[in-house]
Length: 332
Ligand code: TYM
Image (cartoon, rainbow, N blue to C red; front, side, top):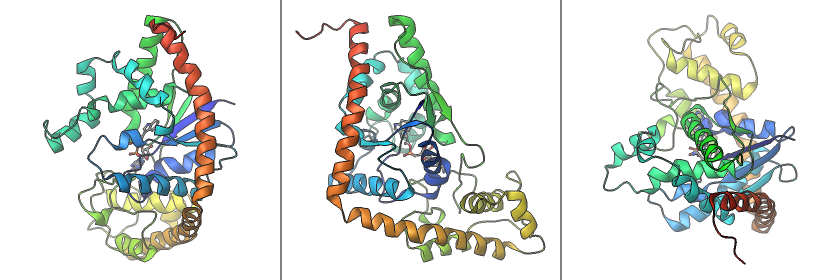
């Protein structure tokens, strides 16, 4: 089977709807036909200031959410990045192949340093994409399911793999991004031209998978729309309404055109009620399952131990080959 790999950061207590519709839904779909590797990049999570106890709890909550969403540890390899030391080891080699200018030109680095200022932003933000490239290249990954915001990191990963292969001989598999059009970008409900994000300006635009469904329904009812009345998909002229249509369509598997027909002659209140209903039908059973997984810590530990073992068996072979190719002396 061809291999897919992807990761999601444990930087909040809950994943949000953008994570789910833009990426995680696809992770679940791909695990049948691919040899799937899914992991929690906790090394990436410390590139921003963090609280250690919160990170540990969020790592567990992340695993519980992935399981509740349908990632099956029998079919997919589910692990925590820091359990596989080869990630940091390969990242160093790739860092040494990356140009300083190339790294400072990455959009995420520029955005984050602009927000925090050069002195409080750590060097980890600069080397973040090389660690992500290592995540992918350790496993001979063919396909990386991600949302639109990760496209540039994938491009760098491809460049680094090709550069390594040119300089040291064919070693690393060059991966493809797998970005699902339609839900590749879910927008903030209050600011429907900005992506939904944990670091959004206001909480009101963010739907968290673990929030009380009533609270999420309220956020949907206060979503920004426009001064027209017609429920119509038009991302340029009507970004708020279009975002709501995308969300309802993705949650219910009803095509956007069919939803438009359903809402013909009705107003934004009806659209919001429809989205809120679809959301609570999705969130309520999900939250029950997350709670069950969180109650069984031993089971979570077992799953992660098995995942790390499988991941290491592949990662260590790739790293050994890389170390050999760059000329490191094998330990006697
Ligand atoms: P992260 O944790 O920010 O996001 C996880 C996934 O969710 C997608 N996503 C969205 N999709 C649509 N609309 C949105 N508003 C939205 N917000 C987030 C992201 O595109 C992503 O697919 N650097 C990565 C984590 C990572 C990784 C990797 C991913 C580390 N190593 C190796 C793939 C392969 C990140 O911060 O994603």
